[in-house]
Structure formats: structure tokens, C-alpha cells
Image (tube, rainbow, N blue to C red):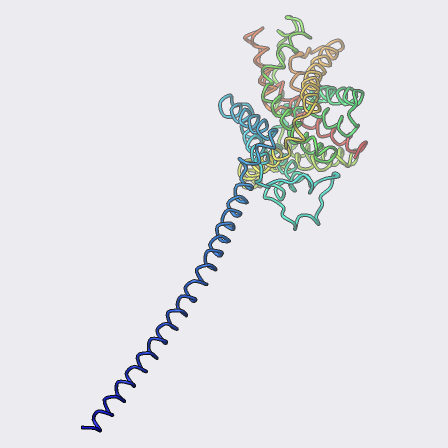
Length: 442
């Protein structure tokens, strides 16, 4: 009994110690858990705050890259976007040279969207391609613009133009070649005027070429001499080409009498296939030997025409007239429009170019008409002076205008085929004029 008593006391003491030890362990665990839960909570708050700051910073940076945000400081871009939309309206609704004016207008919109980075003027600063900078983030339109800068697109289009052109009326009436040459008066007269009012000779030549009413030639020459003016010059050239039915008739009527406008011309002789085949070969050799700088445009024009007339490469002729011509027109239009940046377009030079361009066009029209009147002083077979206005190379629109104005005075007057002679001669004349200016200033 005594031993059981001591055993009970020992058991109670053991239980007491075990309880105390367990309580200490629990308190230690609680304290450790408290520490463990308290410290990470503070760190997590800090982490969450840092994450919030990072999200806010990222959102701020995202907003900063948005074009809407940049429009606030680049208000000129809004004006250019409005001009681009206006040109789209003229191309789609009014049908002013839509095949090229539409891509030009859309290219203008693309290049003036802040932050898009599709075209960089600094890559072509100084009139040459800065190849070293292309690896530092060139845009899509920068690469496509190389076709303009290197003179590829205008030449390809000239192959298509040659394949679609019939030089028969010119060969049937060689005198019409003189009318096409006289219509280039607008180019050289405007060159002198533009140079006199402060444009550099290279800029003046690029403005003067608008008078030839030949879009690819205007783009080709300007890309070589004054690429910073490419946008406004292309817009002016194609806009005035589209306005041929509006611009030319008053000039034609001013320089001719009613009697002259009623002159009927004899039917043209039939031109043999041999003549049509020899002509492009002969013109390419003679013109290029005389003016090597005109060789690219003349050579491509005559190559296309030879494909048309030789009769053995119908597939090639069809390709350059349709698929190749259309693809190149898209690339040419978009990239030319891309050069019309706000800084290059919104200035007094652009307004001057638009004014001088219409002067060039008017002088070209007048030059062809006046030479036809002069030829009539010495010729037995009279020329209707109206066909001289077709010497500007807006093929075939200018020839149609001659036909329309002629029939207004004499319903029995059929001038279309006669006008096609100086019309296609104007294409050759504008290319030759571009070669002369390049040889002088290039």
C-alpha cells in the first residue's frame, strides 16, 4: 500500500512534467507559427504593392504606345489622315484615276498613323539608301519603297504601258511625233519658272515633269532628283491626269477658232506588222545612244510594245498587261503615298507644287495645239489643232478629249485615231525629257 502511494505520487509528477512540457511545445509552435505567418504577410503586401506598381507601369507604357495618345502631340497627322480620306473619296466615288490614286491615298494613311513605324524617312535621307540602318527596325513600306528608289516599279509599269499601246497611228502620221514633242513645252517652261522662284534645279525638274502628264515618268525622275517631293508630285501628277477632261477643253478652245476645230482629217493608212516590229527596236537603239539616261524608261516601254506586236510571246504580253502591271501598281501606289509624311507634305512647297503642276499641264496642252496651228501654215493637208492637245501622255484620255471637243463643233469629225498619234508620241517625249533632265542634273 505504501509502495502504491509512492508510485501514485511519481505518476502524478510525471504527468505534471509531461503536461508542462507539452504546453511549452504548443506555445513554441504557436509562436513559431505566428512568426511564420506574420513575416510572410508583410512580405506579401510588399510584393503585391510591387506587382501593382509593375502593372500600372506596364499599362502606362501600353497607353504611351497607342496612336491615339500620340495624336495629341502630332496634330499634323490628323490633317494628313483627312487628306488621305479625301483622296480615297475622289478615287472611289469620283473615280479620279482610282487604280493608282486609291493605293496612294491608303499609303498616305498608313505612313501618318503615329506609332505604326511602317516608313522611316531617315533611311533614305541624303538622297540615297542608308543600308546600315535597315537592320535597326525598318518597316514594311521601307522595304517596298526600295522598288521606287531603285527605279524598278516605274520601269515595270512602262513595260505594261508599252504592251497596251498601239504605235500604229504614230507610224501612219509621223508628223504627230512633232506634236508630242511640242507638248513637252510645259516641262521645260515650268522647270525655268520653278527654278526662278527659288526651287533648286533638281526640285524644279521634278515639278516640271508633271507637265508631261505621265505618272510613272514623274515618279521615276523625282525619285532620282528630289525624293523628298515624291508624295506631293505624285498626287499632283495623277490628280491632274484625272482632270484632263476638265482642264484641257478651255485651253483647247482658247487657242483655236471654230473653223479650225471643224477641220476633218483623212483616214489614216494601214501600218504593216513589219513596221510595228521594227519601230520599238529602232527607237530603243537611237534614243538610248542619244540619251543614255532615258534608256531605262524607253527600253522598257519599247520592250512591252515589241511583246505586243511580234506575235510570238502572247503569254508574256498578257502577263505584263495584266498581272504584273496590277501587282506593281499596288506596290508603287502604296509606297509613293508613304512618302507623303506630314513634314514633307504640309508646307508651302506643296502648295507651290500643286500650282506649278497645273501650269505645266496647261502649257503642255497649249504647246501641242500651237504647233499644229503652225504646221497648218505650210501644209496642204490641214491638221485639226485639237489633236495637238493629246501630246500630253495621258493615254488614252487626252485623245478622247480631242475627239469629244471636235465632235461638239462637227458631229462628223472623228479625231480619236488621229489624236492617238501625238498621244503615244507624248509618252516617248516625256521619257526623253526625263532623260535630258537626268543627264543635266543627275
